[in-house]
Image (cartoon, rainbow, N blue to C red; front, side):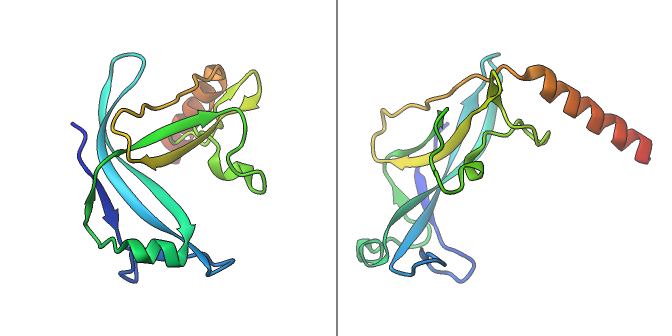
Length: 149
């Protein structure tokens, strides 16, 4: 159950959002509802979103409108190398609501979503091995929640 990718407008109703650092550049936000399967065979329906970056003039010239459906899909890419060298923590893979960064032997995993026109593109996922730290954080949060009641 993968729906079409849909263009979404920002709070001001604009499809193209301009960069706050340099208004020559901008992005378009797109989203897609996908069925996601974990390694234990559990299926979850999720709304995925991605940003399409470019020069503002080029993005505006495409003429996308709010709600427009695009062919292609949104894919997840995970990496041991940061996607953004200036602000690498922006793309940390976080374990659910635990707040814990997913890691392999202490090295953080980075996660980012991308829009692609290729219907055959697949997610590129990396399994973490810091399950103990994640479980500990989740159990501690559960204990703190119960104590607060």
